[in-house]
Length: 429
Image 1 (cartoon, one colour):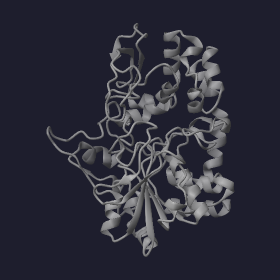
Image 2 (image 1 turned 30 degrees about the vertical axis):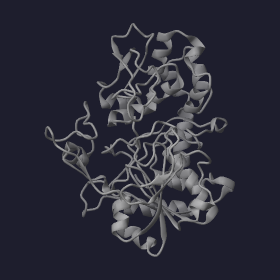
Image 3 (image 1 turned 135 degrees about the horizontal axis):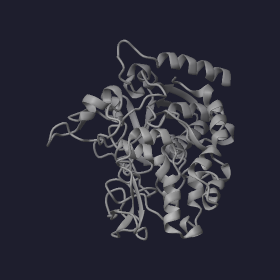
Image 4 (image 1 turned 90 degrees about the horizontal axis):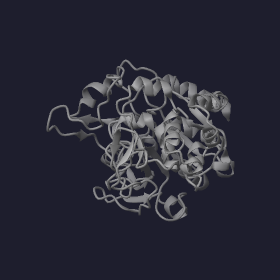
């Protein structure tokens, strides 16, 4: 099996190389309709996607379209928001969603599976989202975050023959879209359905960092024995799930990946829409690997502000000059410390080169832990910090006074082991 996957990966990497027809622009899997439309002819199709499933990540009326989208991020010391218009009062026009393109091509779309935050990407983290109908197309939206099992049963699986996956992940073990993909692969393997991944770049795909998940801490925010930052696209991760036998009962899924073109693991790929409601610009996407750990502590990472995961603070940290007040906003209806002034640190001015070089930086958590001085009470009593960390020893090392550098050095062996393990499944240089 692994030999076949290695051969497939080699062939796919050749097809994913630079193309003289496309220049240097990254071509997404969903743009390569000639590679997958024939497989959908005469088939009933379901789609796993959300608001991020814009074909080719096309956008008009934004500086992103003119500058960032051509060569990645051009200004390394500041960052263009996802939707900043090129002229005052300008409007943002996005390209068509995959579902609209499929319908235009006559594909029989029978349902849309939606992940955490819902199909529109506006629900709070972990919020129950009911199934319903898409207001534009009338197609049933099958929520994977409504009450009950997050692995769809026979009634939903009987609707379709082929599942298309087109969703923007950010490449972190505690980001839940890959877990929903895993659940769908499990169901497709069980009920004999084909899965086609329309691959997208991983914005954090240029490095690997963090410990491998101790499966004792397997949860809804960590489901596979992979590093915190795994550096893989969803297509590569799906190949690894199949190849390593990580589906239920060791089953294999009938899987095909449509790779991107002109993408490598050195590409700094800039997204055009927030992949989820609290990752509002690319700096938050990069800082998320470090600041998400605050979700398991007494300190807030800024939910309820316009800059979540780019700040951290607490009402008792009054020695810090920066402050913010969490409000009830879409995607953070009941943020921690609602209406209270929180004092802490603003990371928005940190140069991108520093963020990239630091990778996972636990100095922020250590700084807040020292500032509050509450000892063990700093960490959530429900063990959420351990679920995010994926291991028990990071918290213990923080409490024993270890530095961020000492803690990151302790997972170097995991990083090397995982980089070796994932090699057969990589589709890009």
